[in-house]
Length: 488
Image (cartoon, rainbow, N blue to C red):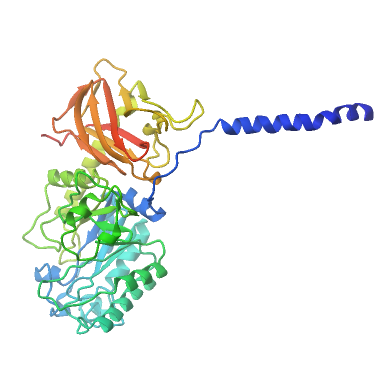
């Protein structure tokens, strides 16, 4: 046995090298992903984008005065929502498919919905809960029970506090209240800043740089919203509509909070932008931001139009649903939100592209073992699996779906999503059904929805052509849907 072992020993290094070569060969069969195109979203920005729909809760003394902008001279005693139930707010949000609710902790009138140590113009001087109430805490507790995240708005413009107009002392006051909210109430996922201020308001310089630094120090995973980010940008209007071209990229150096004349730039973004700053579309379910008895919620058709013009244009929709004087979201608003969620589910729960017999593309990155084939656009991962064409492919890139039935496909909505974790790329695209162009557009981003202007189409072959892009396009998901509510 010893002699036999010795005879095999000289072959061992050779066998070892063969095994190594075989392992290397197998590794080389796996095709690497393409390089990203900068800038890229952060982890918290990606999570935010996937929410698609979040909720604003405008609530305060304006709810009881019928105003939109309070004067700052309101008596806190008017704030008495005897039936306030934050659980009802959160239940309404959950039924609407909302995973984040943002509360106006303080609006322009300066009235605080929590017992602040730095002012008594707050719930402590209200008869509600005998002056021991805390709306922020009640919302946080209700949201935690249902697994919903919380955001806060603390208005920089304060029409009540006498320190307003004296830069240093007011900025210290504002920063102190920021610290209260971000230290006392647990994790806050989004914080809202704006430059809203009346034409005759006292001149005031806000120390946004210091505020933002403190926010990130206290809660590193939070997203900061403002006209200029740094994490989320305003879309430039309060109609819930983004530009038909909408880049998540922009140059922050061209932005400033409260600056006029940048609305179009905010709406469209910038393909050469150096900063990833995705847009948020804010709009109210009612004409006003606060609850008013004389107002009613928008029609379902209008809410769907807003959805297509916001979520369907690479944005997140922030829908304001204001509680009433009782402290509840009104039943007619609850009903309309249920209809809205039901309609979205009806439209997008079925993807007709999944029934297609054949899915093919102009080219595919890698060989047989490459994981970048066109079939990836039909799985449930809309970020990290995608179709990628070859880098060296010349000509327009396209992906095509062929029905396996004689009657073909019947749809009126086309959904396209990019793998934005590797950057936003598509600049121009067109869609054909049986060789006839039915839609065209510019950017795609996280999600682009085409609600066909010609109405329902019937066809067997659907082709999406990418006419222009930054680098090779990476499409993570495609959907063909039927919207029964759309009647052009």
